[in-house]
Length: 107
Image 1 (cartoon, one colour):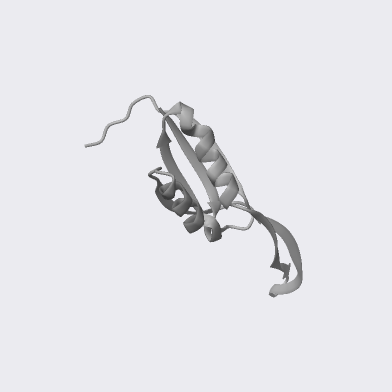
Image 2 (tube, helix red, strand yellow):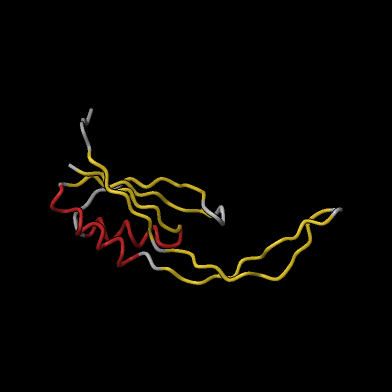
């Protein structure tokens, strides 16, 4: 058995989990924050047999899209922070890990 961990943008979370459920996969969704933007992400955990790992990855890939977004930036001056020009960054997509499960119990 394998554990697929997918870190995705919060905006894509419901679409991804609905698509996984529609294809018969159970998942656990955890709210997480991190990365360069310290933005809201979701970590989805899916336990699957090894032969279904690629199917899960394909579903995640299909429903989590990268996109460009403008974010405000700040500049620190001696008396505080001042806004500066916004910066365009790429958000979304997915970071996926596949991990072997040594032991699994449902109690």
